[in-house]
Each structure stands twice: as structure tokens, then as C-alpha cells.
Amino acid sequence: MPLPVVAIIGRPNVGKSTIVNRLAGGKDAIVHDQPGVTRDRTYRRAYWCDREFTVVDTGGLVFDDDTEFLPLIREQAMAALAEASAAIFVVDGQTGPTAGDEEIAEWLRTQKVPILLAVNKCESPDQGITQAVQFWELGLGEPYPVSGIHGNGTGELLDRLITYLPPIDEVDETEEIKVAIVGRPNVGKSSLLNAFVGESRAIVSPISGTTRDAIDTVIQHKDKQFRLIDTAGIRKKKNVEYGPEFFGINRAFKAIRRADVVLLVIDALDGVTEQDQKLAGRIEEEGRACVIVVNKWDAVEKDSYTIYDHQEDLKSRLNFIDWAEGIFVSAQTGQRVEKILDLVEVAAAEHKRRVSTAVINEVIEEALRWHSPPVSRQGKQGKLYYGTQVASEPPTIVLFVNSPERFNDNYRRYIQSQFRKQLGFKGTPLRLLWRGKK
Ligand code: GDP
Ligand code: GDP
Image 1 (cartoon, protein in one colour):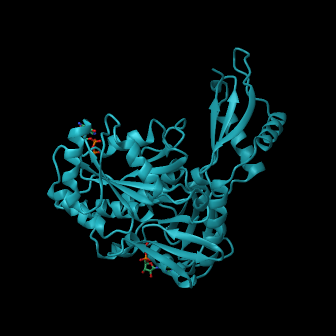
Image 2 (tube, rainbow, N blue to C red):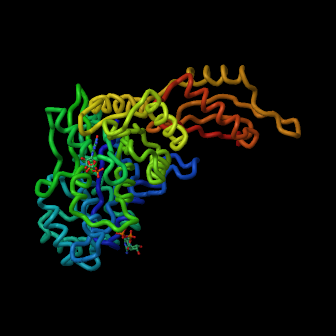
């Protein structure tokens, strides 16, 4: 059930993060008990009235700067806009319209997304209105005076904002699976992308910012839609010079964050490298589902042990995502390429899956019957009372226990493996949170 997305856009220092904090309240999208679940605070969950949505801070947008990151920042903003139902363009009421605002406005006017113009730093109502009227000249409709710090005006802004969100009962129907294709240079990402696009005759629509290149590519496979994220980045890389250290890892990290399912592409001729491990680590940390695609299988000299050796390589070097299915393909010949999307579909479903408390407790009872929790040296035994799934994407189960420190890693791994064995969750991370009484 993807929530509608609202993108926050504006120059640096106009108060975007202050506004995002106000919209999202203290509530973060991700459960934080586990270290490293997420470090990024740019995607936040927010509510207004009965609507829930995700707010994305796009970072400070500047056009007149010639830093090398500028294209990246701009693309990031475009990517955010491409998935957004509405955008809030934040400007600084105390400085009045600047050349930078004009440039952003000019660009925004070419976008299809509805834009709300928030004139921030308007603390006093009277002054606020005088400050706000100057921004009519940006040609983006009515300026809303607000104060991110004090909160005035934000109610009116949000009332308006939710009129742009898709109706609640439609949110489900537009469902598509967001897929990121990541991997080192030359593993065959763009070949794979082309193979997907070539196979699925119905390309629904390359989502674009109306003008420039497509950011994402949406394809249809069987009865499902797949949004291949940041395909512009995959295609374009040919013309870009990278330093030796840079293999687009930041870009890959961003794509991972936006994805439901990540295709981690590995070169069969090289096997699993350190960089592949780094990407896999990030996938697990971000709680994304994953399918490991071992590409160039056509180029591997095979005997009857080859596939077994490769599977061993995956198992040992990518053991922290041992829940992910691996598939051996050739983007060049098309061998098994279509099957990848079947695996993606399964992984996405498992990632979203919810299991009833009754079933979870059956698994726990069964597990306890085989292995009691450890007893400490002081003779105190860990007690595992019950569990319940508190979140999905990824599935997250809270286990209520007498005291978490009585459960050592071994026992935790045992419980984790029991959940896997009984409930599957193939293709997705599974988080267990151990909560003590208190
Ligand atoms: P961002 O770079 O656009 O995310 O901007 P920040 O949210 O970090 O804010 C930049 C500066 O503007 C900070 O010093 C904030 O305290 C200040 N600021 C943000 N909102 C308001 C506001 O509503 N009124 C006033 N007076 N200052 C604000
Ligand atoms: P990217 O940098 O990850 O996007 O990789 P490309 O798709 O550009 O592929 C890099 C090179 O690997 C190109 O020369 C491709 O022709 C080659 N390649 C890609 N997929 C396969 C494959 O399945 N088999 C073989 N033999 N070569 C491949």
C-alpha cells in the first residue's frame, strides 16, 4: 500500500527541514530499535486529518552553482517529483523572491505535479500577508504564508495539500513494484534493463519530467507493473567520467532506498566482490527485498559443479542476505531474464506480508518446545511471552520477553531461523525486536 508522496523543494536555508519536521511531527517512518535501519531522514511519514502520506525533502536546490553534484541534486529532485502526488515549494518570506527562486519556479512550471507555494518565516499574520504577496510573481498560484518554526499557516497549507492526494481507495490500485537495478559498472545493468524492456511489449509509460530524460521506466509483466527506478542513471553512465573510487554507489544507495525490491546484479565471471558485499549490506540495512541476479551466465564455462560453486560463493560471501533468492541469467541471450520478474513479485509480496498474531505465537510455542531460552549463570531464565508483527516492508516482529539481555545471539538466531522455516519470508529481510517488560 504505497503512501502518496509529497516532495519538498526549495533553495537551501529557506526552512525546508523545519517544515518537514513540523509536518512529520516526531514520527519517523522507520522503527528505530535496530541500529542502522535507516540513517536518512529525508523520507518521513506524515498525517493530516485522515490522510497519511510520505514527505520527501529533496535537499537544497540550486541552479546557478557549478558544483559537480548539481546534476545529481537536480536529478534527485526530479526523481522525487516523478513519484510525488504534490510538491511544496518553500521560499523565504523574509528575503523575498530571489533569482534562485525564479529559476526553480520556471522549472517547476514545466512539471505536471501540482505545486503549493509556501512562503516560510512569516511569523506575524499581517506582515506575513505582505511578505507572501510578493511571490505571486513566481507564477505558481497562491502563496501560502507559513511559519515552520511556529506552525502558523501550516493548517491551511495542509488542507489544500490533501486535496491533491489520490483518493484513499485509489491508493491501492495504482500499486506497482518499485525495482532498483544495482551493481558494479559493467555487470550488465543496462543490458538487463534493455532485456526487460524488450521482453515486456507493453511499456506503460516512461515517467518523465515532461521535458528531459525519463527517470524511471515502468513495464508490465503478466498482470503486474514494475517501476524500474532511476533508469536514466543506468543508461546515461556511458558518457560520464568517474574517478576510480566512484562507481555510482551513492546513486545506487538512493535507488535502494526508493525500491521495494533490489536486483543486485553480479558478474558471473568475477564472482562476488567487495563492492557487491557493500551493496548487499546496504540492502539489508535499509530493509529492502532483494533478488541476486548473477549475469553473464552464458560466458561461464560450465561443468556439472559450476552452478553449485557459484551458489556456494553467494552463500558464503553474501551470507547476510542469505534470505535472498539467486538466479543465474544472461542479459545478452535473454536466458531466464523473464523469470527474474517472477522472483521480484514473490519478494515484493513477502516484503509486504502480514502474519496474524495467532500464527506468530504458534511458531514461538513450537520453537520453545524444541529449545528453551538460555538460563543465565545466576540461574535466571529468559522468558519469551508472545510476539506480534508490528510493521511490514520489511516484516518486523516484536517479541515480548522478561529481559532481552537473557537472550544471547545464538538463541536469537535460532528464533529467527524458526520464523524463516515456518513462515518463509523468502526474499525479504525479517526484523525481530526484543522488548523487555517495563
Ligand atoms: P533548509 O536548508 O531549507 O532545510 O532550512 P532549515 O529548515 O534548516 O532552516 C534554515 C534556517 O531558517 C534555520 O536557521 C531555521 O531556524 C530558520 N527557519 C526555519 N523556519 C523558520 C521560520 O518559520 N521562521 C524563521 N524566522 N526562521 C525559520
Ligand atoms: P552496466 O555497466 O552494468 O550497465 O553493464 P552493461 O549492460 O553496459 O554491460 C557491460 C558489458 O557486459 C557489455 O559489453 C555487455 O555487452 C556485456 N554483457 C552484459 N550482459 C551480458 C551477458 O549476459 N553475457 C555476456 N557475455 N556479456 C554481457
